[in-house]
Length: 367
Image (cartoon, rainbow, N blue to C red):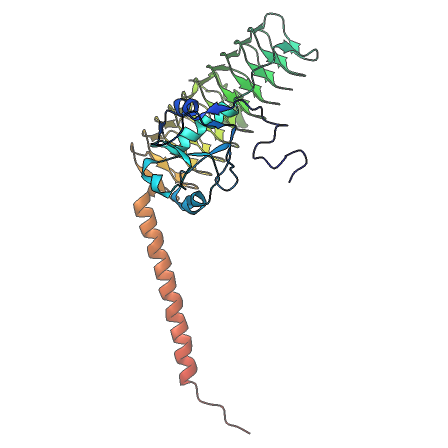
């Protein structure tokens, strides 16, 4: 057990705790239904995984592979799909939800809400004349806010972050330590994690007789409401138009987004994805880890890009692609299976040939 952890899932040194809540209150927050026989007045104090939950805690089941853990779970309550009710132990209070993980997310956020900003400006912060800091903002140590920048109400700007000249940040945003933002306009409730770089010049140059000539990058980065940008991700500003991140999108750590890229609403971009300039992703696109996009592509809404895929052409709406170069996923996996089968048959053929040659070799005479 880690020092000071007291054996609980949530270490109080790092996470604030709210509650307790009644089962009825949690059902309302999760938009879940109480199963027949569940006591709405049951009081619960925290969330916990199936294997560790106790009588005062609530857990969840979203993956059928963990049904065995549910059978032995000691949680006072569990949120699960209506089809799994019969698998729960007798006496466990149940909350029913078509998407149990979504319900759990809402309940966990109730018990462990994001701490509010602590209003105030640290003495070491450098705020340029003419910069505007909204009501209730927390400005941490060694933060730099340059001239003309505007920070909305109740934002939290962590240590060593740099908010560039003219940047506009909406209310209730969080900017992590050592992040830098320039040439950008952020909406409300945007989460920028540590080390993020937004608004720097894109990779743009022309070839001249004496070498390369950098092309001025004259666009901005526009980030919609409720976007999250993971640690050490970079988002270049546009060159002749803006780079756009649609509302509600989730961008993982270590992602590279080039100039003029346009990402639609509620897209999911997983770690180490690289998106070259002027590529457009429609709404609800999902890109797996280390996928790469060449420039000037159009990826339709709700397309899904497999991890490590190399996307070199447009992708139709709703299409799944995989491989490099990326192909329709079913075609890619059939081709992969065929290659493995051919390789296996070749190994077997060679082994049979070797065995046949050994059998036909004349025996060595004894001395």
